[in-house]
Length: 317
Ligand SMILES: NC(=O)c1ccc[n+]([C@@H]2O[C@H](COP(=O)([O-])OP(=O)(O)OC[C@H]3O[C@@H](n4cnc5c(N)ncnc54)[C@H](O)[C@@H]3O)[C@@H](O)[C@H]2O)c1
Image (tube, rainbow, N blue to C red; front, side, top):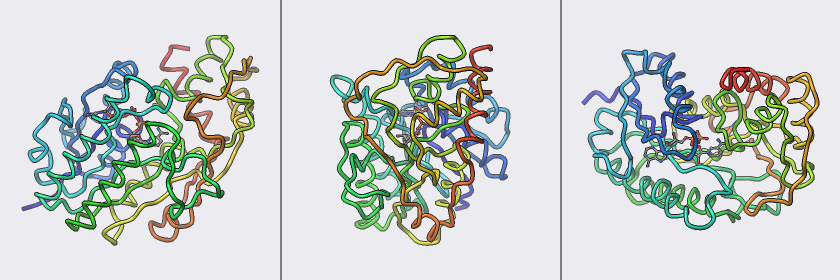
């Protein structure tokens, strides 16, 4: 059987659509699935997919991973990049939690079952720095005990641990990537940079949860995509790696960079810290560098202006 297809789940999303384009550019055949959940405007997701759809090596399945025939989806697949998930920390409290269970845990278990039956050569799971919660030690290392502080983080950790289980029990080859806040063109509208830039363009004040001194490790989209390619090529059968931008910056610094790219100041209104948000994230990137050869290359000073250009075009400024 020739396994020359790469499968991308969550392909209409921010990271998935960018990954599809990179893989097509590299000459691969790509099969992709997304069910266009309405967590944010589906017109943005359709727009994300437009470039990939022009390719004759691109095949798209409009379907829900929890419902489709996953065995058929995995046919001839060499590597599956599993990005489909219900994202977002704040919306994961309350009634919507069942969506998180279904999309993040149940869909992953279904994928893993089919992957083990078909002996899929490699699964790359998109995990999250949210599995750490408020870590006691900085930088956050893969060996630290995970302790998520949001329901979203709990579901991302559960799915990651399911991947580990299928590796240890069925020798399924799984690599998990714990992304630290990804930004850049196509960033989701619920994410802070996107909201700040849009508000700045529309002349509205931005809302900051906390006092702006919280620090984050921000990862540029092309770096997150590069980490996926490195994970596909990783020669060992299992691994869990941080994918961070390599710099720890305050929200106040980010705002200054956005202001510089917009060419004017932003008005800020400070709100109390949101439940489930962590105070600081900082990736220990040594393991990913040593094992995957992955090092982030784009700093916020370079990446934010690219997101400003994309958000401006999206909303017609
Ligand atoms: N963006 C970040 O900063 C970040 C950080 C850490 C982890 N992640 C993870 O990376 C992945 C991609 O995130 P993103 O920011 O691109 O999110 P996104 O919401 O833009 O993309 C996820 C896509 O998955 C699709 N999807 C959800 N459930 C599905 C299902 N059951 N079947 C088929 N498609 C389904 C959605 O329609 C969406 O298009 C997610 O797994 C997320 O948890 C993202």
